[in-house]
Image (cartoon, rainbow, N blue to C red; front, top):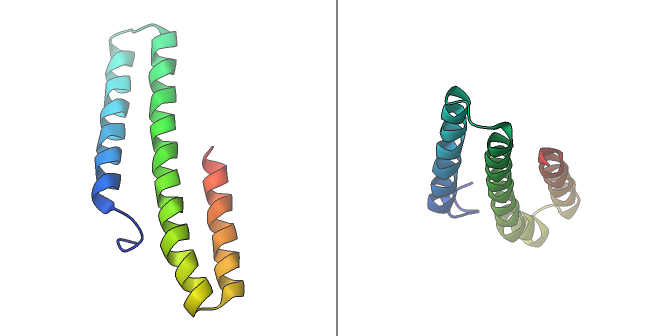
Length: 91
């Protein structure tokens, strides 16, 4: 997986999301209005979705390309389809 994407970028994004989730947890304890909690939940969800996009882009640019050029194209397409289905289920 490391060869498919910039792991530092992913770790940075994930740490930010962890911070967002921790802030949401504190908001609940601090009795913050529901609308504000929902806004922060949406921001964390969007950030997590972006991480999924980065992973999928890396999969396409490395794994799919390599599989089509040097491997079994049918298996590559099947695995790519499965990856897209998993990503679509995140939404």
